[in-house]
Length: 226
Image (cartoon, rainbow, N blue to C red):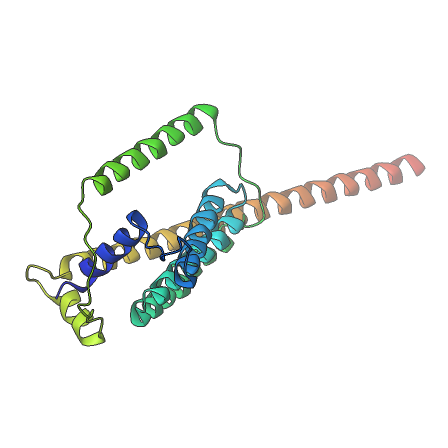
């Protein structure tokens, strides 16, 4: 059974055709869905617009927690737990450590150049248009009463399968991506250590120069007094 495809179809159908009651009132489940969606979009927008990199990581953390809440709303507890464990407890923590290693966690990033902001806005607009065209061309159908098999065994079989609906290749690609992220963190930390070492040497040289100047002044004063 294509568990993930069934989940995405069900979610997109809910967005494209929100069900209403006979009195055209939203149910409690629909209100929760819209609240979670607004939370995800709001925190995601704050993550890319704030000018402090540490705050950006925190907003990203909240956005990923919102996605986990969406999985809980869809009654996919195992996927929600994996979302929290891998992304919230792993990826975001790795990002935060990388920020602290650069020693720029509290610094405010430079204001983006206007031309880059314009190109970014155009790219976002094109992305929204393409997404809308793809979604509008898909004929969403109700999921029906067919139960969704989201058991750990079924998910693990599809994740490691190399067949038609297997995800072995994306799984390995994500592993390589995580390895590249770890290497990047190490490189950033090494650069930060070199910069700090250069800064310490410069400070030591300044102190030595100041001390030499004081010694020369004291020696000159002794000669004059003598």
